[in-house]
Length: 590
Image 1 (cartoon, helix red, strand yellow):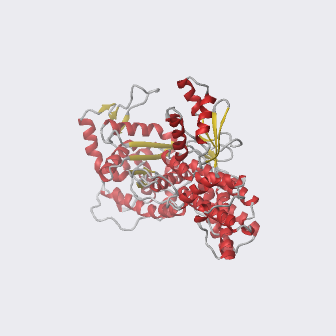
Image 2 (cartoon, rainbow, N blue to C red; image 1 turned 60 degrees about the vertical axis):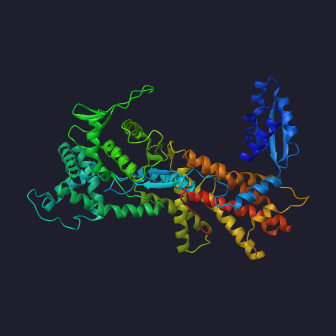
Image 3 (cartoon, rainbow, N blue to C red; image 1 turned 90 degrees about the vertical axis):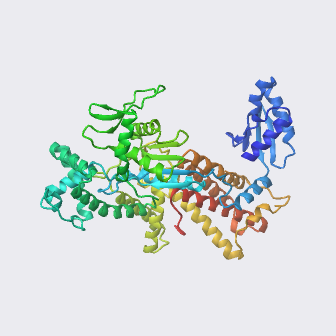
């Protein structure tokens, strides 16, 4: 696209017009041409000429360019461009020889991505899925673009759930030494509960807190005691962490989601007291109804925004407090050029308050970018937030098992694998089904999680993308077996002969392959994995059309066959990079 625009700008300049009119875009009428330039329409106003007159001058300037098979002025002044096959092949040859397939890397920056955000003491459920999947993909894209990226899980390890667990434990085992006010000895090294017991304690405590105000207040006070480093409650907190974290790591590993930093709200604690004093001392925060707050409203706001509470009236820290202190921690450790936060879009006000307070206090430099990806909910077929059949929130591992089983059933329909291989393949394909099903939607939108559709090997699904990759792998394996040769990208540069012309399906596949770099650069800049999903779906469709129209392995023209093999090998590389950026991979067989 850059080369086409450069050539078109040159044409405008050489014809006596400003080069700014030479912008080229992908054609919105692919039945007429591949690319288009509408600059003559805009230039006509400045130069007081008919658009078609300017367009015809550009056509004349470009008619002998080796880049174009056709550069045509059409009424009322559009310039339609069709590329020469040899030029397009040459572009693919250059692209194929580059490690990152022509992607222009960012100027390296330090980027902190805050995603995941599960609460310790309870298992991962479907509500944790989107943050993990979208955040992992954004992390991979930013890293692929050459940035230093720090992915932080930002655990909820200091909130009300900790107090609920501790007070429920007190009710169940009141004789534990942690609840003896006069106990002065060392606390046990082994936790007083197993993972299974902990996972049962939290929902019971949560339900009790909705019915019992006195219990809920005790839980609040337990949180305050943790925040004030009470030895007994700190020991219990450490037990909860030691039991929960291995299970969280295991579940995220199963999702192929990996964090560089396993920190939580508690890690911000050393910064809080000094931060509160600083905000109050400089007059940025003031007291309101016993709480300490910061005004964050701005003149250009279209709606009223409430102040950010940085300390409650009882002296307790809240999410905003720890989020601000976490920014101080990150500034000290990494001094990032960009922050990216992922959370449910219903938390948008909270993050506006935190980000504006951080800017107002000068904790984040004016030039530092702060991006917030607020995502929609994952809903069931009824359009309501996804639940189990009995109305509960489904655990993530159960959801993954359900999708794996659906994929396994599809694989077994063909009966081409043994049991062990089918199960292993179902695990890989099932993960792709879940991730692609999520990422193919724009993050901010709600979407319907439909196991049957997501697990399908046809249509706009993860398994369809993988099936395409497996098909290409199979063709390349047979080619190696037949010819004893490896795919050779040099075939793109070999003259095809005067009688050879690319078919429509081949041309379309080459065009889509050539748009890889542009797609990835845009998706990374806009933090939009769905753009990569859309691209690889179109690319997979183009490959399958090409495959059905051309008998690749029995083609007698060896030069043509070598070119086709080079093309599909490049397409496989592109699909491999894109699926890696989305967070999944292809099996060898399906």
